[in-house]
Image 1 (spheres, rainbow, N blue to C red):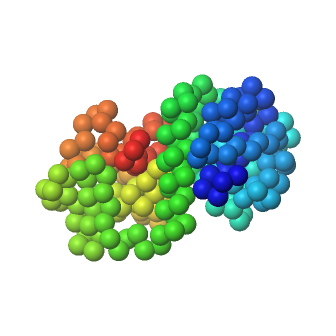
Image 2 (image 1 turned 45 degrees about the horizontal axis):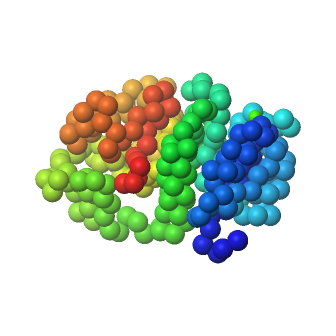
Length: 236
Ligand code: CA
C-alpha cells in the first residue's frame, strides 16, 4: 500500500454490496479492507487503524449500533453508516452515538464518493486543527471571521444574533458532518428540553433568511429532514 492511500474499512455482511464497494474503492487514493460482521469489524478497526469506516447497520452477530458504541470508546475514525433502514430514529441514534453521516441504500457511486471525501475531510479537520477558531472559515461566498465575530456573504456583512452566530459556527466547525437536532440543541443551549427542537428551527429559519438561502438551496446548510443539519464542503 502506498503511504498516501486512505484505508477504508467496510463492515458489511452482504457480499454483493461489499464487493461492489471494494470495486468502487480500490482505486487511488483509497484502499479497501472488509469485515463481514461486527466482531471482525471491531478487531480490524484496532489492528488496521483505517481512516474511515463504512458500516452496515444490519449485521449478523450484533447490531451496527453496537459497533459505533464500542468504536467510539477510543477510535475517532469517521464512520459513514450505510443502511437500508431509513427510519429517522435509526439515523438519529447512529449519529448521536458518534457516526459522522449516513447514506441510504440504494446510493449512487458519485453520492458515496462525495460523502467519503466529506467524512475524511471532516475527520482530518478535527484531528489536525484545534485552533480553527483563530482564523476564518469560507464556503462559496460565505465567510466567518472568528476574531471579529463577523459574517459576510459576498463581502457584505450579515447581522446575526448571538444564537444565530453560534449555530453557524457550530455547523462550520463540523462542516461535512451531519449534526442531529438534539446534538445541536445541547451544544448551543447546553440543556435537553423537549421544546428545544422548535427553538432551533426558528433560529435556523431566521439564519437561513439572513444568509439569503432560499428553500431548496443547499449551498451553505443542508437540512436532512427529521434528522439534523449539515454544512456541506466546498467540493460537494
Ligand atoms: Ca446487512
